Amino acid sequence: MSDIYTEDILKELFNISVGKSASVLSDIINKKILLDVPIVKILDVIKESDEFNNYVNQTLDGTLMVSSICFKEKLNGKANLIFPADKMRTFINLCLNMDDIENCDEDIMFNDVDFDVIKEIGNIILNSLIGELANYLELDINYTLPEVKIFDKVDFKKTFDINNYTHTLLLYITFNIDDMEIRGAIIMNLTLTSINEILDKINTIEDDIFE
Image 1: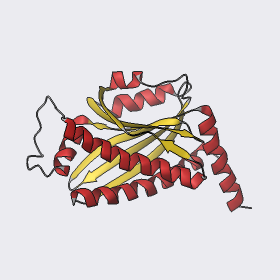
Image 2: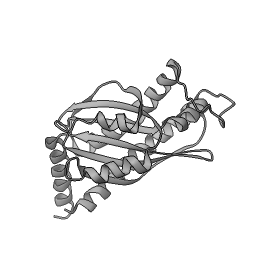
Image 3: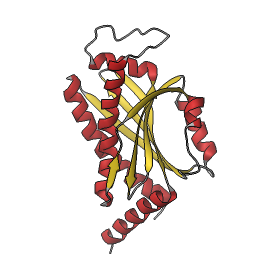
């Protein structure tokens, strides 16, 4: 199976999961939310580091708000939900029913309540995403609780453990609320064993379909 076909299968799978997440989030804030994953890429963190760095440099600008969970068992890795901090400030205000959602101070500040909101958003989206992948591939996975941190993109790239995580699933993601669009990413770092497990399972499913 070609990498493009594999990426297409993963894109469809992830769009199903973020669709479910969007429905849950819509109910929470009583506003229609649309989540979409238009592109999925499988990258070797060493061989394709330039493509990854170009994406981070061009798409993720300024201060970043990152919600992360780790997972283990049949799949081992770390998933990061990443959005510009200023856009997430606006989304948090929507969640908390604050009136002034248009103008935020240049020096963006977050309190404990804000971090709890982002943890819940990350928990809903990332658990749905990884859970859907695990169910589709019939794999057992355990998760950690989400952690939320604020980075600039240089510091964020330093957090990647290329010694243990050899591959990355890079998901472009768009978050639409009312007339506002937030563009971000989900970066899923995986061990070599884990990426091979995913590819083998997808290949087996493909072979069964066309037998």
